Length: 414
View 1 (cartoon, rainbow, N blue to C red):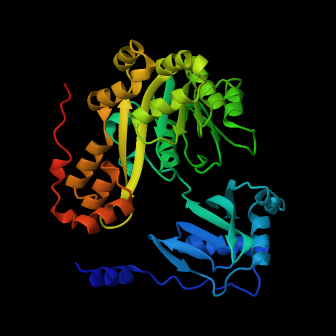
View 2 (tube, rainbow, N blue to C red):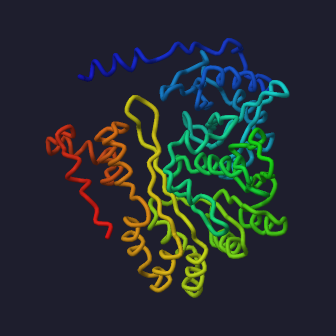
View 3 (spheres, rainbow, N blue to C red):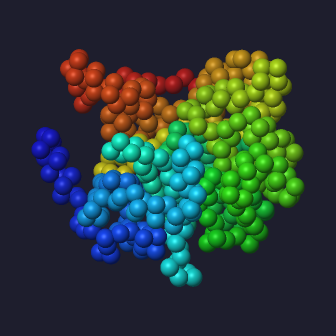
């Protein structure tokens, strides 16, 4: 298909969004909920409200302006007051970006929720603001909806210990955790008491019911100051399951390990790419003097690491590909007999026997026609998009002629 045909196809796929019918000369704080409801009814996945620009929404991966005029600083001030409160501008001026969830309830049985980020920007030489809002489903997806591998599902709920979900920003870690929580809540034996600590709360479980499940969600820093404080709080409330939104520092990692050692099942996330990199990241948060001791404590507690990446899917949308490894008794015994200095290398070797590499996941998706060759190479060869395009131009590289099997040879799992 030539470039002209591709452009024509994309235009043909665009829907007629139109403009927000209630736009006036000024956007007041009382108008914000109506604007967001209209966007949700247009199936907008993302809404961007920015100084000196019209309001934009994203539908099926395409941006559409939905106001006739750009918003000025007075409009933005009203939007911020409605979404965050009167101190938003002061916090932005102090160099903070603001993460929160925003909810609209048009009636007692309906709710619309949005994950929201507010960031200061420069526009036309002035300090300005961009508000990014992502629409959240009322109900978390199921593991089946996400196409999660059966091995991950089977090992999702050990009796106790630490399960880590990792990946870069925007890789769907929170969605995967929410699907896993839903599965535990709905199972016949329930999940017992589940406590979650999130920043912000994205998925809520009010509509997910189980006869033996009790869920309480706490937002950081709205209800408690930090994730580490959340874990300490959880240990005083006799939970069965603790979800820590992100283990980003030494104090939180230590608290999560302690909770796993004391008989709790703990879920958390890390911003890492790969199972082996996650091991290295956890160990690196500790001071050198305590690193070995805490590394062994972590390994005794660890039960599974799942790394997820979202890549473009053939036909539109995105698909999650996953690298994972189950840390069963055998794996932990192998690693505990070694120095933590070699765990990263050894984990990479064990991954072929006790889990799945990202390259194996990508190869399977490519052979099933779910991703194209470019997505496969970008994911498995570590190219940035610019690098790949540069190589293609410089060397006359024809991606359609690359043999994927040259990159994804058979693995020896002995």
